[in-house]
Image (cartoon, rainbow, N blue to C red; front, side, top):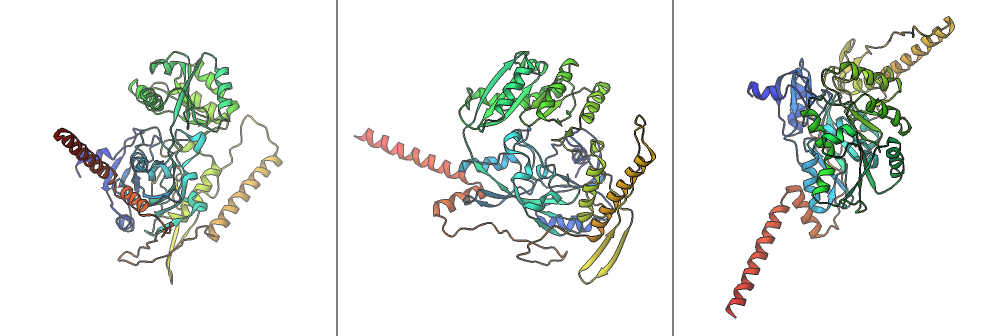
Length: 507
């Protein structure tokens, strides 16, 4: 791979520059297992489509595993509306296949569907219709990933939190079984007002409507940049034809208006935005602050997320907004934490993430420096009948208590806080040492190869009662041959029409 090609892997959509030592493009699970088993000293960074804004795929003299070649549909269960896909497949690729059967995967991110399924699982992505469909974890029935030992692990619905939302620090996602839904006709309505109170009243009412997919708010200044009126613009999408704007050119524009907003703001010198999530009643105060300080933004107001944008020279303004977010106890919600936003995680969240990290990657092989600063304090290796055993101690067993200097506390209160903190740490130590694994791996078929991999078979329903037409449709979706059949049918119809014309001419 040339230097130019390596440089392309040295950053992601965050713009943060790193350095890729090597780039690996595996084509199957065995390739990934070999990479993981034979990589000892280097950090392994996982990369889907590189669309993240938090620096989660930025390497630091790392091996980059690019899963883009693993983009196949493994199985398709039309009866139960399930599809199993490899992690490198993008949402766009998946929906192009599914729409042939009038189906769709509803979690679509604001990048024209360029995000990979594996990357969306790793960040527990929320699509533009988050108000209706929620985050990615609600649509994953099970997933398979490779842990730090190179083992293939299958997680069911109850346990996917060990990987989903962990941003690649616990292992390499290789496949997932997703829920899908029937595709419906959609429509959009546009509401404009100069009053934020009126906008919020309309939004509150619309949130209760079952047919509403999303409610997106665009600030007056951003609306003007997008060619709309300089007022608050509310774009409401329905999963029915209730809206005034049907599936035509206007619908195409407004359904992708968030992408247009990103493009326009980035071209004006703005950086990737913040993404705090608020309770609905707290939105007005935050939005009013942004308006009064001329900070452009849009909002998935139905989901409670606001996206304020800043230029590089607006650090003070950005810091002020960050302080407001932290004081309101709001959380950054969509772009996750990666390399850039780790300070938004509190100590309790870091402890929980650390426990999960220890379970699957105790030697810190994956995505070093991302999400949490995890460095094992010590490791102890010994042989046993079942193979390698690794004992890990927690590095951050004791966190210093820094009392608020502006708040007076009695000695008794201070000691009570210290005792409470000590009990929490002791509880975490017990849980780690007992190593009570929540994961139950269902090994239906075992295959031992030269690197000792475990292959787990798919157990999706294979109905013997399926009609030939259904089997044909599934086969064509799996092999992407529907377009070929349509073209053949079209040519056959054309030939038939020509025959009729010739027959009519001879008469």
